[in-house]
Length: 111
Length: 233
Image 1 (cartoon, rainbow over the protein chains, first blue to last red):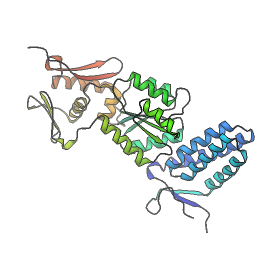
Image 2 (image 1 turned 90 degrees about the horizontal axis):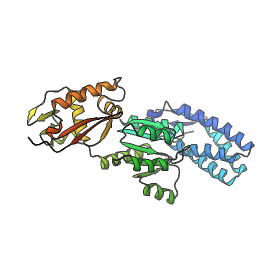
Image 3 (image 1 turned 30 degrees about the vertical axis):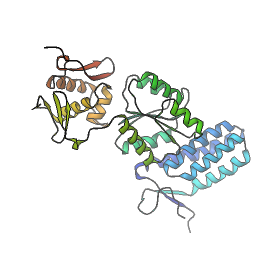
Image 4 (image 1 turned 180 degrees about the vertical axis):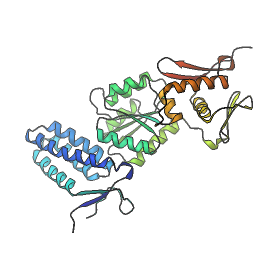
């Protein structure tokens, strides 16, 4: 059984989604580097962006993780951010997108 | 509608613009508040979508500028991740017409934009029949303009431009705005085309002060159609 999360995205924005996901993968690297330098403000900014845009692209989980990381940055809670970052990385690795929304509801994952 | 978006997150700006364009609007995105303000001084927008937290001049500061410098009541919708009650109250009391918290939902955003637009400027519908503007009347069903009851011969573009101007009486309209509204977003037409058509319509519909109208060119901006007291004969 595949571990992939097949996520249907709005066909209107399907062309934008690969870049959005690539940018989130880049965020993982940036946040990891910021975490190593205890740069919580940079983490807060990146997490804030994820929180704001994830749901709109059809990835409410990215918004949820972004919101939690933003709060972690405010609390300067490196352990919590590290855990959330690992979850984000794992989540991104599992995503497979389709614009075939006839079968699946947008933003819902199917194993 | 022609919508100005202030959003520093590129992914978010791309997303919102895609939604707006899909709904038939045009989207002009700005990363910096000062850039939006500079453009708003010479361009016309039907609605502003403002993110609060952007580098430099914040969305809240842009809102204050809009209310202080744009004479017409253009709707402003705040879009931000801030969700504290005092932030919402601050935005609304500073002159925002509505407020949405990110992450946004496409349908809700578009519905709120439509609602704001309806309140700001009710749009004449094609099935409304005849709209009267003094000696001028617009027959929406037959797509004709009449002057003193006589049909004025004009091209479809001239008709659309005439109706657009009559629907925006008193409003300062940039050439770019007129182009987008009448010729469409993708039209590769020089803004001088607008000048040519405006001149033609001014003559055909007799939009002159002696007839109770002034269709004036506004330097470095565009045009404004106004009603004036007709000169005594």
